[in-house]
Length: 210
Image (cartoon, rainbow, N blue to C red):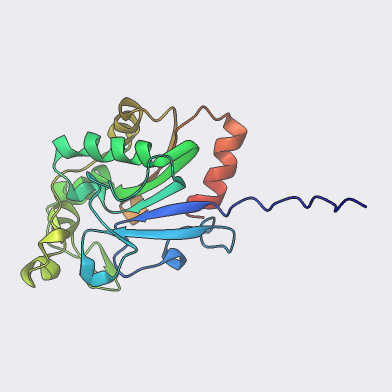
């Protein structure tokens, strides 16, 4: 009697947590913070004990097409403008053909509205690190910079329109964005392949803030 052939389980999808710091997938999105996703943490700072030490512009330790998704929270503003295309090219390289990226960063339009009201150094909100003023959102968290953590410096920035266009020019085929002026942030969902509206809405429901 022949032995029945058992269906092999599909490998667990992996998302690359870019610039993770000390955080894990609990601090990413509802969609990634599930047992169905494996997290691979990448950071420039070896002291935060990432799985991979690397930068957004050089993720050579991550194989081409080896991850199904990327989560990047408040990282791309730390790059110089000319480095952003290099980083996004690396994002595209490490994603498989069905992959997508979830990216969040400061919303300069919302921040500059406060600057225009002459509130550059007044607290815009209070975070776990203390009061955050527009100057911190524009240039980097001042206490962290003063303590010597120059990785926290901001070197570029985005509005919703600019972020959308930057991702499309980089080669992402389908892009959806969300601006949250009250939170001073932007969110983008960028797909490596064409996705219809229903697919994008479903991914946004999993990965954009509620």
